[in-house]
Image (cartoon, rainbow, N blue to C red; front, side, top):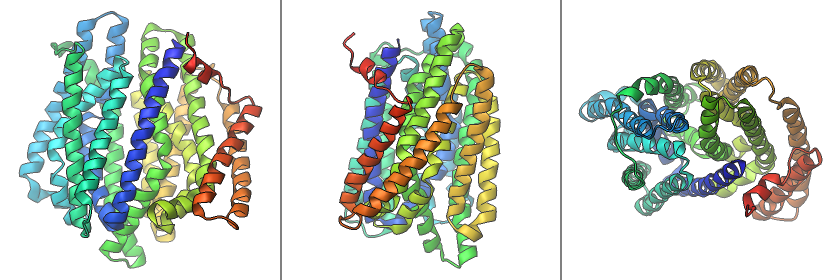
Length: 499
């Protein structure tokens, strides 16, 4: 069973890494063609759209996955089909009315945007609200049925469609507003693609629609807290998209375009680099969540403890490997990828966010798989309040770094509360010693990498600095972890084992 988990995690991770690399490449293209202002407009539209999308479907995939695991544990095939149907019904109840209101009430959208140019571009995405919400349900069915390969392929192809079409549409565009509009069209087309392909695969593999009545109540009970948490995240991002440029204009006397450019640099360039681990954490979550739910309903406490402990340590391990790389080479990465010094400085200065971020992400997924959605929602609100206070109080002192400080506080608060609750749920789990050792390794690797980078930068250019320092930093970190017996090759051996 564990061998299957390793292989599934490897499949999802490989495809997710390729997908994120494509998205990363796409942001570089967009930043160079439509500039920081166009990227800022594009990001504002996606942030507002994300509010409606997460409100419609963000909690449903996880819940559908869990209900499928629960019914699968009881051998109830009809119940599995009913869970999928209930997910579709639930998301349509919300998305269809909202889409109609947004399309026909477009004149009322001004309050959502600090920049009027974003309003018409935002409307392009509205049909995608219904389509991608249904795809989210299909995604949950893939997770629950442990069909990780088709899920990974569809996710990758969706991103590929967006990137290829987007590059074609924005090529040669000089106007940032027109560039943002064409990039948004590519997003809509990618939603249409994943909707069609996922439905085709679901029915091809024997999936059916069934009476959802019996599954609607547990679906809503479980998905609403998750949806509330993720919707709040999207609302917060949209609030930041409106509030941060306004505060920057007020504090530093910037005009609208300059403020949006700063927002685009921080949110559109630096944050995606800092969120690189999220794709790896997501891969672990996708594979472990159905397994945890199944073991939870079967009351297999020893397996639950094993999965929880390994997942938390894996998240800490990922952060430990990546923090030194981004800290050492953050400036070079920003300059090389975006030709923007500020984006690199933000990555360098905020690299340590990765550790609390990884812990908060994985522990939230674990606790949601164990019926603790209401408590994780409460903890999220504590962290969100800290972020909002940071932006309101600190922007006049530290500029766009107020958002980064708020992000760090949010993850620290959420992660700390999650770990405390997880210890109550699984008293025997052990992670504190591993975490403390990881902090020592991170600090040591950063010192080592800084010294190495200082020597190499005297003789070689940026590209060679990255080529040499990144692998050297990872190798140093991995070797240190191995010496502390925090890292072994056992999972790799299981992955490639013929047995």
